[in-house]
Image (cartoon, rainbow, N blue to C red; front, side):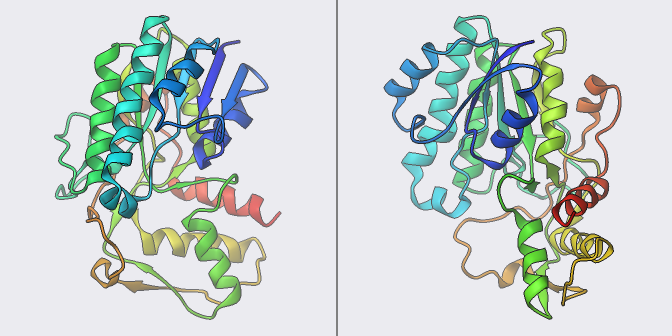
Length: 289
């Protein structure tokens, strides 16, 4: 049994972590209002009061467009606070696990990104997350940074829920067909990251998503197909394609291709993460059970 402190426990990933780790470990799960990453002094006092072997940060400023307009806040939450947490964990010889993003890449690579590929963010969100990664890894070689993308799970609605819910009410749904990445099951990620409670597993940077890649349209189509198989009374059977350029309300630039290669994570787990298709199918089956 490990003592695990989770920050951001009401988010999609943090909630999954808390729920899945609690039966086997001593878990302290923190979220707002007790957790404010913009108040660094209060954050330091809070973390110093905790008793933990592993400190997990699933909290972040993740609204990509807001990060472009509220840059100071994004920098504090996604970078400065991360550096503080990493230092505090290192000072007590604890491991720090930090959740990052595929948005550290510019999307210009035609194949899946590996951990050694150069990160070149297009927007402020990606830059602050990259800065946070670097601060975390600089604090201790034992610390772990896990990049994820397109996260879905039962604790907070995601794109998967949105597309299925729309198809239940409307005869037509659509999704972007020229943007590609790798979906991540929050519940699967809890299982993967628990491997790093073992101090024998090396720290560093890992891509922690399900195997494979897809466009938003393919992601949504698979979700609808699975919902139909589960007996859901969906009206829309096909996800219509739309281009990324049609999303005029977007403020921040979005990288077009950020599929993540998971070979490094597989070397720690002893097996590759299951496919995103299997993870989505399992999620949809349980959603309509």
